Image (cartoon, rainbow, N blue to C red; front, side, top):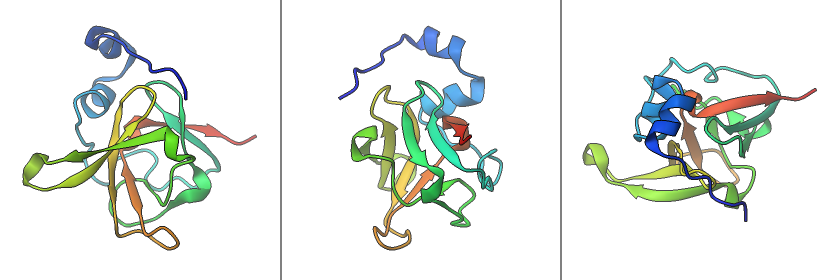
Length: 132
């Protein structure tokens, strides 16, 4: 397993944009239909915007119509962790980067086969490493 990355809040604020900090470190959400990767179709690997860990292959990305980039699976189960999120008056499953604990988004049980999962991820929590 990869060693955890731990930084102070001041270090994260210096490294990230205000939007990235609000989403990834303070468990926020970017507005629907505004993220740079929502409609992106370029092949590559989506990595954590905070630490660079590989998270989602572009081949697992699909258009869910939700307003956020959606994936049916991460690159490996050890690359993301999940927590119960009871904020905003509902119970959801939060998705975090396993290396730096960045809030990425949520996973829902309404995705396509074969897994039936929809990883609904904030664009600002991701960077795309394009193939080629």
